[in-house]
Structure formats: structure tokens, C-alpha cells
Length: 346
Image (cartoon, rainbow, N blue to C red; front, side, top):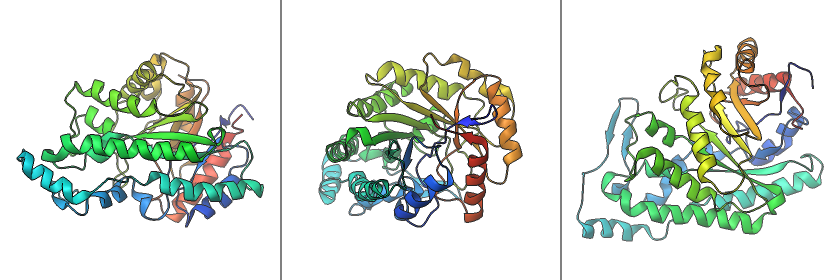
């Protein structure tokens, strides 16, 4: 690896390819020796983050917020309902099935086949991405948040347990996607969330509660995100200060190892000031990935790398968010840039 190449490439989840097989066939070929783990690309209906989870509530549409982002209009439901009204709606739902395990096991069969064929290197893990509890809870109308939260958390933990019972731990990596949590901490008004504790404490408690169920031998990492709705952040980050704070709190509250942290870098942030808070990390992150690769911008990517290197010596590279909604030309140029700027993952 040359001095100008970054150590390894990380994928946050969605990938703009036609199928899981296409992801596993193409990504290792396009980025040889650069991957420690690979997701299934979240192709098909999963390509828009948590929107596919709304199927869980289709039998009781009154439970889900009506959102019109284009016109900035939202219906969060009435401030309260009687306990009998809430119970009537919940009865329509039946048991919530988050279904992350169903997609993971289907994709792992393909992963295992591609590894046996030598397409995926033997030391690359299968990465499963599961959003933190707060993300889907942000879609629930106000009167139902308290009742739905434990039910949905149970469904997420069930998915995790089935995945861990079915996939060898030495083959598995779990990424927790942290997006709406960051929006809430930045006081973005679109997604009111139900957290009775102080906000940061409540967010970290929920992330830690899930993460502490990740089994020994399974890798755990976090994708800290400022959003990609309509290819825009929900707010422009001042710097990496909040994400460093969240990373430190995760480390304090999670009782098992954290293998990687991913943080986004806006396209226009080519200044060392943006990265300066990284000096405040209170622990050595085994793998720090900076999402500084943007489409059609190899020169700007190099400038962002140089700005980051003023503050932190070693890191891997990634895009800011998933790539499922990129255009095909955008995706192609990102893959070219990733290959050009990165070196071996080990």
C-alpha cells in the first residue's frame, strides 16, 4: 500500500446493483483485497433504508406518520388516545416481524456459494445492517410510540437472534445504522421520537441494549449518518464533534468490542477543522472509516483525505451513506475512486 492510499474500503449497506448475486459477483472483483466485510446491497424494496418496514403497520395505517417531505407537511397524529383506542389499533397488527433475518439468511446462502467459488475471499465477512430502534420509531404517530417501542424492539432482537443462530459467528458482522438518532440530537424537527430519558442518554441506552445482544465472535460496527433523503443531509454538520461524542458514549455503554465506526464527510468539507474533533476520541477505534468519497470527484476526495490526515493518521474510506439510490454513472465513478485511493484492508 502506497503512502497515499487509505487502508481498506467499507460499504454502509445499499449498493446500486440489480441483485444480491450481482453485489457478491462484482464488488470483490472491483475492489480486490480492500474489503473486510460485504453487505448484500439491500437491493429491491430495501433500497430506501427503513421505508420497507412500514409494511409491518399496513393493517393499522393510523399508527404511521403521514409525511410529505417535499412540502414539509407532516401529520403526527393526535397528541393522545385512550388506552382502548390504542389497544384496538394494536390488535390489528398481530405480531411484528422485522424480517431482517429473512433477508439475511437468503443472502447468506448466496454469500456462502460465492465464497466456495472463490469469488468472495475466504477472510471476508457477511455484513448485516440493522437500523437502531429509534429509526422506525420515528415513523410512528405520537399516541402509539410508547406501546409500539417494546414490540418493535422485540422484533429486532428476534431478527438478530435468528441471524446469529444461523450464521457462523466467524463469518458474521453486524452494523447498527444510526441516522434518526443523529437528526434528533441535532434538533431536526421532522422526526419526533419517544424518549422519556434525557435525549442522548435515551438514544445511547437503546443502541447499547441492542448491541450488547451481538454475540461473542460476531463483529459489531456503527454507521453514523446525517441522512441522504433526496441526496441531501437533514442538516449540515458543523464538524465531527457530535459523532465523536456519540462514539465515546457507545464505547462507555457497550460491554462488548466495537470493531468499526463510520462517519460521513460532506463534499464541501476539505478543511482540517471539520476533522479536528477526532482528537477527542477517547478510545482507539480498530477501524475508522471516513465517508469522504463523492461521485465524479476524485480530486475533491484527495483533498478531503489530506485534510483528514492533518488530524488522524490511519483510516479507511467509504461514501457518506449507502449507494442504493445513486445513478449508475455515479456508482461507477465512486467504485473507480474507491479503487484508486484505497489499499489493502490488512
